[in-house]
Length: 157
Image: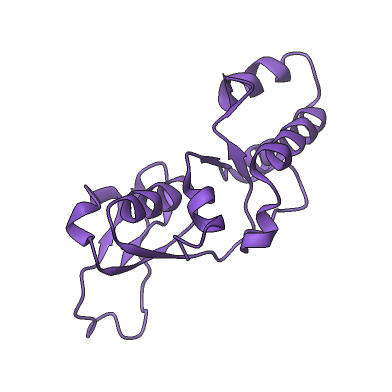
């Protein structure tokens, strides 16, 4: 069990989850996760689908583990780069010239074009754009580094 909850390497561990005291497997937070090769051939449940949860799931899968991910909330998954430019750098540049709503619309257009419809894989998008959510709630969009392909191909459940 790998818990991928919290923000910016600040671990959040769930309290009072029934059965945790009798669970016999390995339990860790992503802040202490090192490498996926120690889980080769094992089933691993990753709880959380932010950047850390996606990256750990990808690493587990790449190292021969059978990774499954729990996704509780709607989220935006964006490509790491758009037309060879980092998504983060592009957002900083575009926000100097255009309203946030327009930049969000552009990012969602390119995201769908590059990554496809994430809802087909159980990853529903929020109604408001990724930059608007970051500004209003602090929730960071996921920048895909390859996990979405593994989810699409059924390698990450």
